[in-house]
Image 1: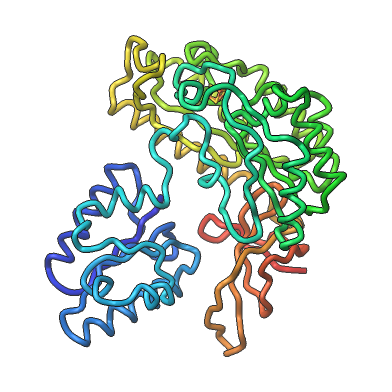
Image 2 (image 1 turned 30 degrees about the vertical axis):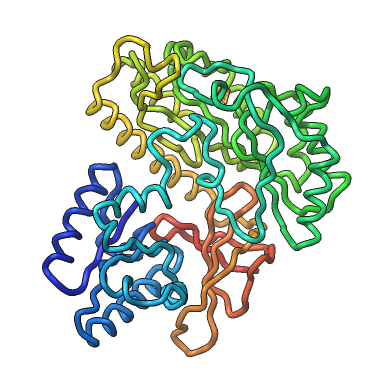
Length: 429
Ligand code: SF4
């Protein structure tokens, strides 16, 4: 995450800022000097005088205006003494009480950032992958997993595969659609295994959703890159099935994949991504990679980076390996030193950013049907009402636009015009 920090008031507030900056950096986040470049804005407020209160309010408003899409975190005396409704009006997302100031960094990361290893590596956290809002709903279609990847605690924690009945899921989606939800995301621990206990499969479920509901957009959260039939691939011929899949690769080295007990080696993965991209040009593939798995040699790491580069991922969730008690991987020999894990993770972030920018550049000049989320009113240079919205293309690229009308929950044809600060800027047609 990129963090912008600011403070008002006493020396102590300034000193805390320093501490937070170094804790965020140690945790792998970057400090942004400009609020517009940050994902999270942290402000240490003050209330020692009435003037300090006024300035704290003013500063929060200006941070919010500078970057309405960033998360706003406040701490300090003003946030302590003011009401939560006033803070909510100022767009504050998280308040850290003075007594918890020492924990501001972990609390912020917990609220807005994935932990180093996802809770159920790699039941990649759907909420981290997809923003949750009124127009997008997550539908849990199954639980449990029959496999035994060596880093994963899921099979121990979540047991055998259990799927929800098709008619039950269809009914839920119908309800959501009648409440104006425009997009559903199918989630589970092992989504590709859906129906193994009910004598059905994922493809049949999606066909039923297409036939028996009028939900405009269907997405998949994270799907293990195996157990996907040719019939499944053909689902993407229907435009309501969105051309994006999050396929956790975990490593681009076959020997590491073997130690992880993954069922998909690099050749299989490449075949899968090639098929998807041939089916729908611009198909977006995102992934999870673990850096520093036990025994990962320099050569394996280099092989991994080389393969990852060929896959043109739209986004990489980079996880620094950490031992999880109860998994087989935790007792594997030759653990990678922590500093090397972190250095690899950093390299992976850089590669991920580079691949993402390449993908954004390829989208420029194209048009896409963007589903807009709730916007924020911003000041217009000519005094007219102006809304700033973010939304997502079918292949899950984030787009920002300014519009004189409120576009919330509308799907509009949009031209993807340019990239500013790493974000696609669109013009509604
Ligand atoms: S396939 Fe592997 S990583 Fe995925 S949930 Fe099952 S055991 Fe865990």
